[in-house]
Image (tube, rainbow, N blue to C red; front, side):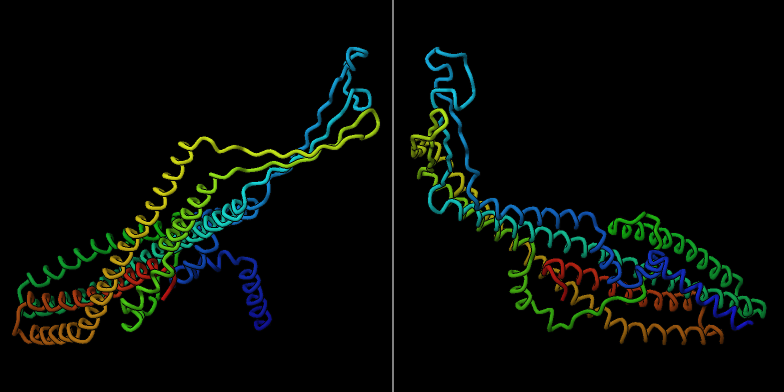
Length: 423
C-alpha cells in the first residue's frame, strides 16, 4: 500500500512539472549565464524589435529594383458629338475613345543601383540587430558576474561571522579564566555587528541586481532568479592575443559591419545621383475606339529633360559629403572599438594575474598567519587585535579572489561585445 502511494505521489509530481514548464524554468534560470542568455534571446522585446526592423529592411530589396506599376489612361473625345447629343460617357456613343497604356522606364542601371542600396541598407539593419544583441548580452553577462560577486561575498561574510562567533567564545573562555580582558569579547561582538550590517547591504545589492537582470530579460522586477553557481571559463591567453582579435573585430564587429554597409550604400547612392543627369522614359501605346470598333493605334514616347543642373549638382555634392561622413564615422568607430579591445584585454590579463597571485600566494599566507595567530592567542602570546587583523587578511584575500573572478567575467563580456560573438 505504501509503495502504491509513493508511486502515485511520484507520478503526480512528474505531471505537475510537465504541466508547469514556466515554473520549472523559473527555478533554474540564473544558475548560469547561459540560461539567462537563452531566455533573453527568445523574449527580449528590444532584440525582437531590431530583428523585425532588419526583416522589414530585407523586404524592401525586391520592390526597390522593380519597375513602377504601368498606368492606364482613358480619354473620351467629343462627348457631345459637336452638339448633336447630350453629353455621355458611353465609349460607343462619343466621337472616339482613346485607351493609353504607359510604362515608366528609368535610365539603364538605376534599378540595379536602387536594389543594391536597399540590399546594403538591409545588411546594415542586420548589423544593428547583431549590435543590439551583443550589447544586451554583455549587460546580462556583466550583471550576472556582479550578482555572483555579491552572492559569494555574502557567503564569505556569513562564514567570517561564524568564525567571529567562535572567536568570541574563545575570548569569553579566556576572560572567565582571567587570561584576557573583557574588551576582547566586546571587540568580537562589535565585529559581528558590523558584519550583520554588511549582510543587510549585500542583500539589498542582490535585490537591485536581480531587478536589473529581470529588467534586461523583460521579466517582472521581482521574478525569482536562482543564485549564480558557476562562472564561464576564461579563455587562455593565446585566444586573447590582440593581433588575432583585431582581425576578428574588423570582420565581425556589428558596429563596424553596419558602418561598412553604410559606406557602400553611400557609394551606390552617389552613383545613382550621378545617373540622375540622364533622363527617364515613358513608353506607351493607344488603341482608339470609334463607336464599337478600334480603328486606330498610336505609340507614344516621353522623357524628362534634366535641365535643373544647379539642383542636380547640389544633390551630387550632398551624396559626396554623405559618403565622406560615412567613411569618417567608420574610422572613428574603428579607432574607438580597437582602443576598447586593448583596454579590456589589459584588464582581463590583470584580473587573471591578480586571481592567480591571491590563490597561490596571498590566501595561503593569510590562512597560515591566522592559524598561527589563533594558536598564539590561545597561549596568551599575542593580543586579540592581532588575531582580528589576521582574520581580516583572510577575508580580504578571499574578497580579492572573488572580485578578480568577477572583473575577468565583466571584461570578457565587453570583449565579446566588441567581437560580436563569443570567444
